[in-house]
Image (cartoon, rainbow, N blue to C red; front, side):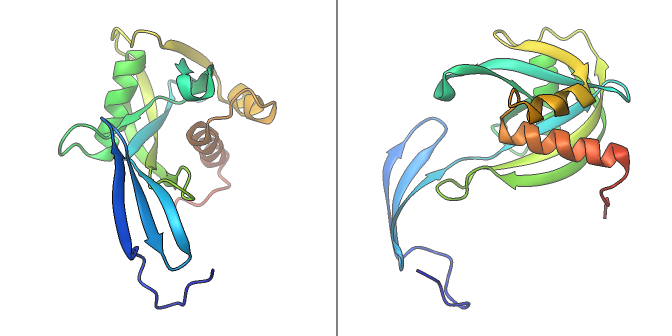
Length: 180
């Protein structure tokens, strides 16, 4: 069903069918029919560059897809009042032991807007070793940014926030994406 241009972007009715620690699921009634909508608090992720050639990634088990994925550091917005950029920097330190400096926004993405409202704010930063403990179960992987982009092409990096962040960081580094 197509919506008229002046249609409100709110459902006629909604009913919460599940509430967990992180997510909730609503059954919503729209003019086009019922929709199951997952509500998520949002997250932040960071493309961390220790120098002009390398990027800091993490490899960790993602139970939902039954495999270990190579990703940029990321985490849930779960600290009251914390700014997105501070969350991204905190997650970098907690997961890898690196500190972020020169943090700048890349973009914000909607991960799967067909059924979820999760948004992830993506940042680019310099990464400086800080001898933090890192996170249990998370392998820190430092590799050339160019190699990481190749792993997108070969299907070894498939996580959407990581693909987006790495490609935007590469584009900025190459000077062919406007920062305005």
